Image (cartoon, rainbow, N blue to C red):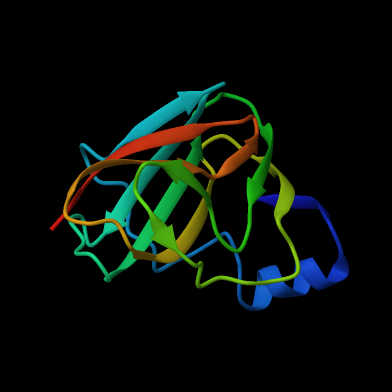
Length: 147
């Protein structure tokens, strides 16, 4: 991936040192994991644990892969992910001086984003919405069972 712009030098350092969107330890996209495809960019979201308990930490991993035949420009979140839906989560474990970065993804290249939150919802069935890409704007809806 060729980075062509970061918001500030501080953001660049934070991205490299502690909030990188690349995460070699992130698991590969699992079959059946919630996905969304927009403009040839496939976003897959996985949750660890898959069925959290109230008060438990939840790791959210998002992988966006360029499925196009040509390079594609994206703006993606760094140091966390945007979340929505009816699942209530507290705090993000990731903090840095940046919010997003611009990148050019070659065909087949990917960008990975992570977030760690605490589940505050009571046991039940919920929907978690996750946004990793800002441009193009894309959200993935993930069904979540809180035990």
